[in-house]
Image (tube, rainbow, N blue to C red; front, side, top):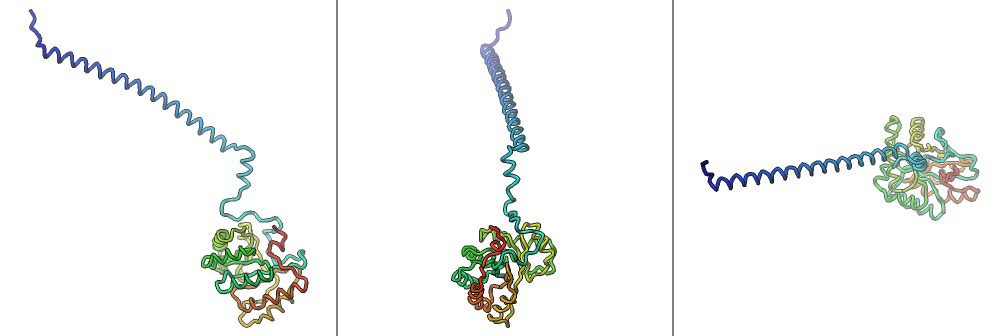
Amino acid sequence: MPPLTPIGFNLYSRGVRITAFIVILLCQLFAIQLLLTADSCSGYYQNRQQQKSSKLHETENPPVNEKFEQTEKPAQGEPKPKHPAVPSDEILWSVPSAGKKVALTFDDGPSRNYTIKYLDLLREKQVKATFFLIGRNVQKSPVLAALIAGEGHEIANHTYDHYIKKMSEAVIKEQISRTYHLLKEWTQQEIKYVRPPGGNNRIKMKSVAAEMEMQLVMWSVDPQDWREDITPAEIIRTIKEQLTPGAIIVLHEGKPQTLEALPALIDELRQDGWDFVTISELLGVS
């Protein structure tokens, strides 16, 4: 007769077998879940790859209209292409074909002491002018730059530091670009024109201006109003002597003698049949 197994041990063995069976069953269920998950992920990534491939194809081969818009839009923050009536390979001195039109231009502003006075006078005389502003002055008095534009005057670039005499093209470009972005921000105008301080370094300046699609503007009438010893009467006389059809007159902000000469100058030229316009209007550019 075989030895009897203790009842406690038999129950223990049976409990172990049940536990093992449950563990094996759970492992099988876990393995099945992993297989299902892997299959689902595989389908997901295949769909993602197809979507990416489709988007890439659309990017490389956009519809005709979208492609046209992409190539036509200028880079953000850069000067826009100018009107074809403004040749980039020429320095603008005057526009003889404009007839009895003349452009008043003011350099070196904005001026904290004089800009408001100039604007009041021009508004009273109903004259629109072109202001060539210095970047560092705009940085100091941006509200004045905005006010000039708000009065309907044309805004143009006069470099940032007002000195380019011995500068390289790279530095000149930085001077123009820095001022361009300031003017664009505060006046909301398209800045199309630039003038070299003192008329210096014109060849390099013209090259940089053409690259940036801006027009280099000089002048045909210069009364040298910046001289401290010049009188308002001399300013008016010199302008009238030098005046020709489509002339561009260079004057300066911050000069009391210029401010004093302006009312009589405007009245006398109008009596002689001259019409005051901006540079763009002189060129017939909208």
